Amino acid sequence: MNRFHLIALFAPLLAPLVNAQSAGSPPAGSQFMQIGMIVVLFAVFYFLIIRPQRKRQKEMVSMLDALQVGDEVTTNGGILGKVRKISDAYIVLKVGESMELKFQKNAVLAVLPKGTLKEIDKGE
Image (tube, rainbow, N blue to C red):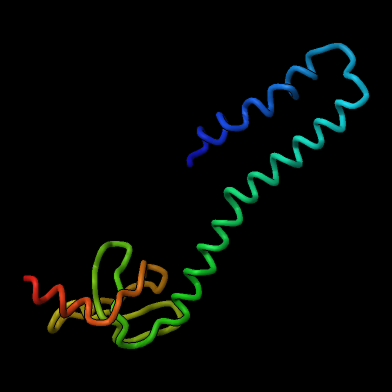
């Protein structure tokens, strides 16, 4: 869901706020209504955007912390390889018989099930 979908979703909620400002003197209860709508808007943003992003970020950090030598991984660039060395910020992947490449640790997209690379090699 991109920004434009969110704006279209919340446009009916924001219309009373705009109309209330253009009218003469607002009724006494409208201030509470405006504050309530703003609180609801922030709550919706939190549960639709912020909370799921934090959850994905925590999962990614835990996956990177759990990396071990011998794990089969794929990178953001689509390169598959087996982890040979791990340091704090970098990993070395064996991507061929005699080829090793160094990547930043955060370039790892996913850990693959054991034996995935052998299955791919059999298919070629």
